[in-house]
Length: 505
Image 1 (cartoon, one colour):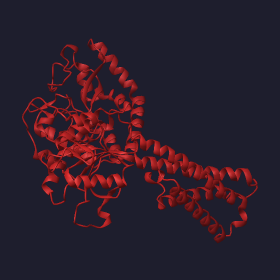
Image 2 (image 1 turned 120 degrees about the vertical axis):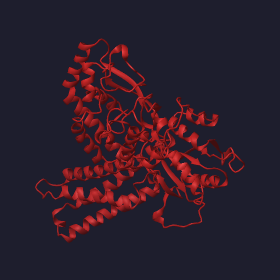
Image 3 (image 1 turned 45 degrees about the horizontal axis):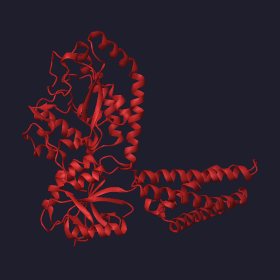
């Protein structure tokens, strides 16, 4: 897989001039796509995993139910381990037969044949095991036959309902990946035709983006509109969900491909390079596939599918636990703020969240009400007169950040991630995104209350270009190397690192 080196990308581009960020204007065709309502999408691997758990549980419960109904209570209870082992084996064989893929769930007779054949093999293995271990006389033949027949009927009924549900989700777009193509002309037309022939149920094609404006890149390709240039795609993907970008460029166009990747790596999307027109042939392991179209994996979303589920659970568990344990501290802080100065207890500020969306984060107010800097245009410095005595303490100890636990519960922040910066925060008199190109790559994941940069000493004031570049480098390292264990390590190290408040004002 191709990966942009985050540190190189950050350090290669620095100090761009300008004071106002101008959002690019998109074409009417792109605006029309953005204006269409979008159903919340489901992850195929997560759906498949849940189906496997439900199906195995249903088979096990059926086997145990038949045991309770037909087996005499004084018979040996070998049934429970046998039921569990057979249900697990059934799940393994269903996967081997390809019956636990989203595409398989949409089929009718094909998936029934696969699961029934696998279920039959499970029963044959069960009978063979009983014969081998001479345990056949200890089990009820009525139970074995009843579980086999009942399991077959259960699988057909469950798969019929599943097929209806999956097709409903597919028709609503919930199981389709919202996809755009980078490129145009005849190559893109062939790619679209092949995708429509083999992946129309998995892909929702939104349109094309291409920097070329001559006859090689017409405004319409195979019935799909060209929505803009590659740079337009960045803004487009921030305003409407995009899951997959397929680059339709020849492998020989190395410079064009690299230039495109350098622009698009800031987005939380999967990027694939189509190999449908390549004359070079690689081993099957070198490719992944979109339908029948061979592609090269160039970049992946940092956190997706089950990893996203694990991180969601981690965030909610840690946030709820922290709120319970720290609620006395938060209550005392709120009382101290009210006693020292007039004004609200909380300070609300807009910041950039996941994929550059604006979110409202909560903090305990640490400044005098008449000196509040809602846009954070001026960094807080040592002995800043705007900061109250209580505010100075809670900023040094990061207690002022604790209300962001509510942002975590709302799903706007994670416990661990790149810290969200104020919109007008500056380093060396330049806005952060002007000082460091590729800065918005930090937003490929949700921002966090604490992060890799913070536990490595890059907490507090970022008044120089070196400081903001170091923080961004650490944030990008975290994104590229994320794991749930890394999150746990950062959470455990955060209280220790808070003891060093040298740069926190």
